[in-house]
Each structure stands twice: as C-alpha cells, then as structure tokens.
Amino acid sequence: MIFAAIDIGSNAARLLFANVFDKKGKIKSEKATLVRIPIRLGLDVFNNHKITEERQEYLIKTLQAFKLLIDVYQPIDYTACATAAIREANNKDIILENVKEQTGFSINVIDGIEEAKIISKYNDVSHLLIHPRSIYIDVGGGSTEITEIEGSRFVRSESFKIGTIRALHDSIEKDEWKRMKKWLKDIKKAEEPINCIGSGGNINKIVKLYGSKIDHNIDFTTLIYAYDHLRSYTVEQRMKKFGFRPDRADVIVPAAKIYAKVMEWSGINNIIAPKIGLADGLVADLYKQHKKNAQVLLGVDQ
Image 1 (cartoon, helix red, strand yellow):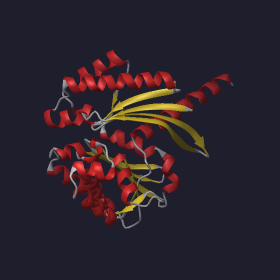
Image 2: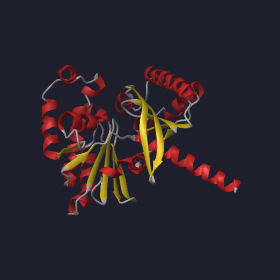
Image 3: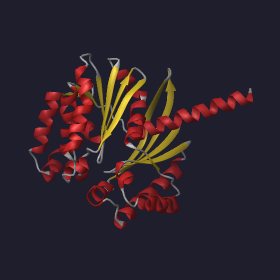
Image 4: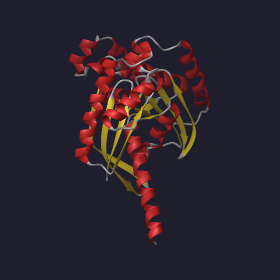
C-alpha cells in the first residue's frame, strides 16, 4: 500500500512515496519515489529568527508541487511535518496559515523528542541489529536527535540544537555541546555493546564513500579519516570530486563532525547507516494507523 510523507527540515523539504507492508510482524517499506528540494529554511531562522517572504514563497511553491504529485500518486494517506526551522521561527504561525490557505496542507510542527521517537520506532532496520540496546542518531540542519532503545522498549530521547546549518553559521552554543556530552556519558559508562544507527543523507553519503558497502556501516577511525579528508577540499572541490549537490557539499563536513562527537562521547565504535529518516517513520506510522482502523472496522462488522 502506498503512503506519502512530507518532511520540512532546516536544510530541505522531502516528499516520500513508499509501499508499506507487514512481513512477519515487522513493518517494511520500499521507496517508490523521493523528491528533495533544498529550501534551506534554517539559513533564515538560525540567523534572523524568522523566515523571509522570499523563502516562504519558495516553500509554498514547493508544497504546491508536492500536492500535485500526491494528487497523481493517490496514496492511501499522507502527512506533513516540520521540524527545527519552522519550530523556531518567530513568524511560524503566519507561515502555517499561508501554507494551509495556498496548498491545503495542515503542517504538524513536531518537537525534537517526537522527531526522535518517530525515527526510532521505524523497525525496518531490525535485521541489522545484533545487540539488545541501540541508539538512533539523526543529524539535521537545525538539531540532532538521539534516542536510546532496549529491544522494542523506549528508554530515553533528547534533542540538541546542534545541526549542520547552525554549524555553517557558527551558531551552536558551547553549552549545547557540553549538554550533549553529559547526556551521552551514561551510554559510555555501560560497558555492554550497543547498536548505533545513523539517519540522514549525510551519513548515508559518508558510509557510501568511505564505509562498508556490504554492511552499510563505518567505524570511528574511518569516520575521522572521512571528516579530515572531506574538509581538506573546498565546497567547490567537493562538488567536482564527489559529485555532491551544492547543498550537500557544504553540510557534509559539519555532519561528519557531529556524528564523530556522538560516537566519541558515547564510546561507540561503529555506526550503521540504513538509509532511513523522518519520512520513513512517518509513513510507517500512517500504515499502523490504517491497519488499526481496518481492524476496528472488521470488529464492528463482526
């Protein structure tokens, strides 16, 4: 069954169409189409605390295009969420009103903890996990979400105002780095092994270039090498050498640094990058709700 999800992040807006199904009690999904538009709302918000009219118009045009694609695809259901940039924009309310009026979308603005929970509940990665405990790391343009899971039980989650767009503009507060390090110390104290799952386009690209193509992972030493190697080039050189888009070429270095810091402070030596993100979690949630509603209807019929 095809479901769709829109993820409006600090760096880009994404529209995912995915075929979601249940296999032996596990929710699986296969990407049908993924459209990504680098709107970069964070450039406005993290510098001026509001989204400019120009970028707001760009957002609305993007969502109008997404709406046309949804009308053509006709998924069973769809949802639209926004994260750090819109969440922190002083003119958030007027933007949401304009989006609703001009596109028909009711945007659900979620906080960092909810974002982390949605990603970590997506269980299509269960076959990659070899230890009972796991942490999920999602590095975005405006924030980094880290969630600890034991088996299928949620343990804790935290969101930090540490992101790639913030890093580019030197707007990450030192106290936020300290808060992250302190939060991760409990993971480092526990000597038992732990799975580490990274989500987002940057870690996927880093693993593809420097990590294991078979196991989709990268160890800490190799990640540090990747960070040093990538930052030895200018943004323009990265675009030419690696074929990066402009909006990937500049943020991939701060992303590598953030992932490396999390691994260092948590004592984790290996990170898996199974190509998941917020949109994957959103379509999985839609499927769960659809399945629940169908079961209720069947119960009524009986």
